[in-house]
Amino acid sequence: MYFSFIIPVYNRPEEIDELLQSLILLDFDTTFEVVIIEDGSSVKCEDVIKKYKEKLDISYFFKPNSGPGDSRNYGMQHAKGEYFLILDSDCILPSNYLKEVEKSLNSEFVDCFGGPDKALESFSDIQKAINFTMTSFLTTGGIRGGSEKIGKFQPRSFNMGLSKKAFDASKGFGNIHPGEDPDLSIRLWNLGFKTKLIKDAFVYHKRRINWNKFYIQVNKFGKARPILNKWYPQYSKITYWFPTLFCLGFIMSILFLFFKMKVFFILYLIYFLALFLLSLIENRNLKIAFYSLVAAFYQFYGYGKGFLISYFNIFMFKKSPQDAHPELFFKN
Image (cartoon, rainbow, N blue to C red):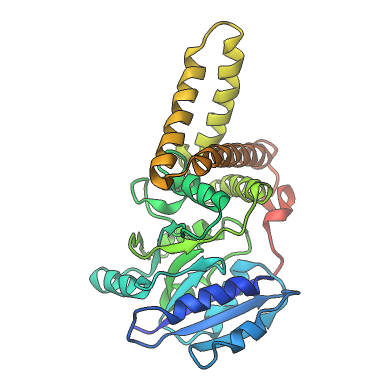
């Protein structure tokens, strides 16, 4: 099977350098290609690409800015592979990545898969804390794509595989962002294709982020979900309400303290203590464990607020998604 890596990039030449270096170190005997799509960057990575021309079968395309989904589609349209491996530019691959993908697809072929993400030791403490809260079963790790236990698995586009056959049939990603990956997964299911998680095909996801950027990101995730629920009501789940209900419940638990009802607030304290201890065990670092609580706050509040606002706009006020939240849509 001939693989094509599809990697959009926007103003991140240093990330592409790290990612391409990890591709050189892959333990894989069969040739593969790398397709880089520069999405209208003002800080281009073309000079970085030149360093790897003799080491990788690599193609570089520059196009006007139209968002990551459209850029991935552009890359797949120009790729030669039978199976596309879609990565974000802030990822680094372990050496066994392609072997794990090939082994899993040979064992049980699917036209679309997703893999989980982990943190490298070299990542910052904030990056490690955010990685913990985005992947932990105590937060929303299972819901967002780290587990197959909650319904059908929806791959995420930072680490996704897609066959050429499935791309041709689905026409690839839509123009919503974020949310383009679950949108694609659902359209693939409706076309009869299957998805799965390949647990051992993980990437190190750097998440170029600070607290403010993290809040903006998860807030947009929250806004996108009611739109997807509107488009595909048969795949709507009560679990998508959890961050919103968690935040509203926390506010109520504080209000109950004025009426000497402490039990609900104590339950929240127990939860945060469990989150702190689990992060401490996994990361072995008090600072990261504390940051994990901060990251969980941003994650639940940002997503929950975005979800609630979008829900009212879409379902109560009957606005069109593009009119209600134009910030989530790129014009191709």
